[in-house]
Length: 243
Image (tube, rainbow, N blue to C red; front, side):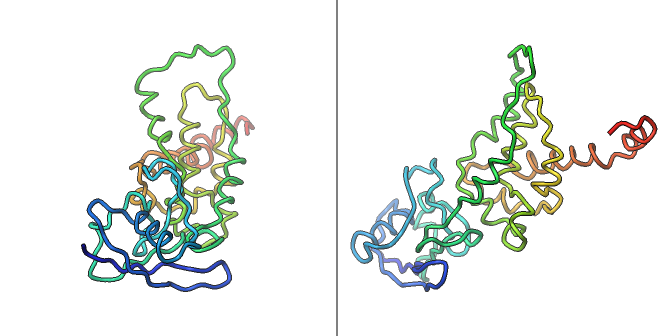
C-alpha cells in the first residue's frame, strides 16, 4: 500500500503551523478519509467539519494544495503523492480551530436579502424555460468555496461585497418570473456588485458546476447598468421627474 504525507494546519486564529502526518493510501480514498485516518490513529483532537461525505452538505470545505475544495470529493490518487499534500482552512474566514473556520458572516449577509415575494393574485403557472433558468441556482450547497476563492473578499473589507454565493441567491430570486421585489438597489449598494471584475475564479471552484459569473453575476451587473446608468432612461427621468 502506498503512503501519502499530509501537512495539515493545526492551530487557531492567533497562531498555528502545518504538522506532518503519514497516511496509508487505499484505492478510492479521498482527502477526508485521510483526515479521518489522522483523527483515528495519530491526532484525535484534529478539528474537521464534515457531515454527509457525499458532496452535498458543503461542510468539509478546505484548501488542498492551495486550492479551495471539498475534501470529500478530492481523490488522493488525483494528487501528486510524491510530494506533501497541504490541507489548510479556508483563508477568507477566521479560523476557529485547525480546519474549522467561522463562516457565520455569510448568514448575516443572507439576512439582508429580501425573500421571495410573489405578485398579488398570481397565476402560479410557469414556462419550463423559466424554471430551467433559476433551477441552476438552487443547486448551491453553501460550501462557501466561491466565497473563499473570491479575491474581493480576501483583499477588501467584507462589509463592501456580498460575495458570489449571494449573487447566486439574489439572481435566483430576481430572475423568478413570479417574484415582485426589486433587489437591484441592494445589489448595487449593499452587496457591492461593482467590485466584482468577473475573473470567474468562483465558477472554477464550484463543486455543483454553477455558472456563477456568466449566469448570475453578469446578468445582475446588466440590470444595475439598466437601472442606474442607461442614458435614455436617465433622460426620461430627468424630463418626467420620475425617480
